[in-house]
Amino acid sequence: MKNIRCAKCGACTVVCPVFKASGGMEAYSARGRNHLASVKEYQHPTPEFEDIFATCLLCGACTKACPRGIDVTGETIRARSRFSRFYGRHGFAKFLARRALRHPQVLGPARRLGKAASRLSRRLPSDSGLRLRLAMFESPEPQDQLAETKTSPPSRSGGEQLVYFPGCSAEYLYPGIANACRELLADSGQHLVSPDGLGCCGLALHAAGETETAKELARRNIEVLEGQRGTILVSCASCFAHLRQYPELLAEEPEWRERAAAIGGRLAEMMQFLDRLPAPSAARMEKTGAGPVLRVFYHDPCHLRHGVGITKEPRRILGRLPNVELVELPDGPQCCGQGGLFHIGAPELSAMIRNDLTARVMKLRPDIVTSTCSGCLMQWQTALTAAGSTVRVMHLAELLRLRA
Image (cartoon, rainbow, N blue to C red; front, side, top):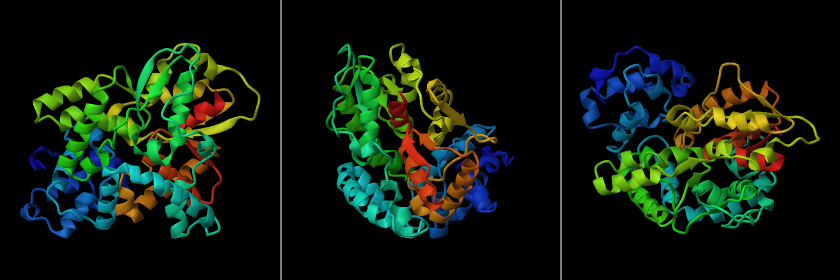
């Protein structure tokens, strides 16, 4: 890190979830890590140094708040690239998670086993460690009743084809998300095609400092996406944010950078795309209907809120739904503490951030918590299980499908 650039103003500490959850540990702030990077021990980092740099959500709040525009998240990732393979606490568990993401097809069997185990685990106390670990598999209805297909239902006008990048979660863990997206678009004469060969977007590996592996995944996805024409629709907020970063990731390889930029120009985030759709899809969402009013809390994924700036579109769409009341936190959006693999490496801090947010949101008395980030949805499922709550968690596309 370039310590000379830091004004030590503390703007980063005010917005850092980890700094606040840790009780104000300076080393866990961007300012603290910036200082530590300037000392000689940083050249040969100890396990303690590695743990400090591992204990970061990479939510982007500090980068957005920095008055000097320091790329704090980028500097942290570059620091991690110098560390040992199993750096940080619970380093081996994070390593295994990264290996699984290199071969995401293993997540399919994991989902089936996890769902079977989660049914049995419901007999355990809500604060049981096993129960909380399996909570991510307790998918809300009607996910598991949807057919796991690669193509959309027949559209009314049989028109435009859209390329779909579902991400690891929608492809293997929560297929209901992908099918909800396909059904929502079918009514407007569009259909989604998820081409064979797509893999993990590479966000988790890039965040861990495994830059070369992240580049390998990026090149593979670029090659697959180049074989399809048209708009590339992405329903996972984190995947969308990282796919947009492919040109930067491949900046030192001119040919691949240009190819990545061409792919980037075709990307469309799901809610932005739906918000811009003309009738009949808009009319379908706005139609009146009977039934009780649903109180819905929309959780802003940090990658969209800080990195991309997509916050209004999901709320506009929710505002058009019949019998839906959008509830908001009085102090504005807050990180859920999932942070990719952060919840594995720093489970205590992650739980503190998660539980603080949950307590605030439960005061709003929501019926449904929704988001567009797969990681955030997993964290919310765990959070509500820990709180003993029956509030449902679902991807915003699934909610739209139910209410449209």
